[in-house]
Image (tube, rainbow, N blue to C red; front, top):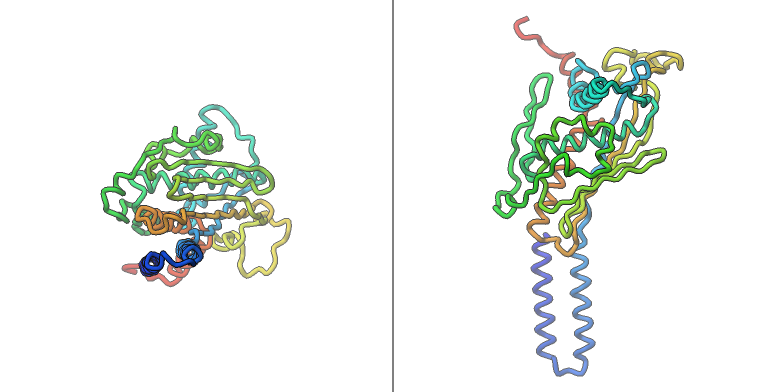
Length: 331
């Protein structure tokens, strides 16, 4: 539709200019010129009023007071798959502290910054894992019993101009402020490099206060401005429905006693990821900007599939239903 509108606008503009030229000797030519160009400018602003791409994602973490740790549900189908990479990152963090004979002073049951720090590095790891060869590939997944693998990718654009629009960023290229993240040194995927469009600026900001807002920004002047903001939102005691999924709590019980260890010793903590991509209005139909829009849509959808709790809760329910109705082969 945008192409049709642009052609129509061009045609109208040409006609107006033609009429102005044919009547250039008229005493009202200046008034007509101002009105005509005013119409063209308003039409341009209307047609190029491009809305940003947005995606809201809800990650959830579980922590245990007894072990002062995150819960990654090792050995629990689907749940362990959801937290697999973050569990590996946390294991690396604990191992690094142990090797340097350090002890973590953080109370993960209470510390909000630790939760946000974990999610920030989980997003960074996702970028390094899935965009280590090129930024214009779409992740392809292979589902097998008990695990999901990613392999290669399908090209979104095959033009040489796009293939050459690649710069590789390394661990050392990351902002200094990001290196202060407590999990920064625990991502093995840093060694692969991160492919982004040339001249992309990577920025990271972290606020303080009750929600610890943190933002990863990928910015290429005159092309795109991608922001991924993560904030601490809410917490509740207990494991919620996860307690039912793993058999720790009884779904038939209407109430849970306040002193029940299954309630008091655990928390489920919700975050909010707000993803926004803005593009310059004056380059709405530029081919490279269109490709960047496709990339932003793919990126946000991948982050949603990877981190949104409700996506994975549906997978847990589907798995439980499949197990309940399964027919064991050769039995």
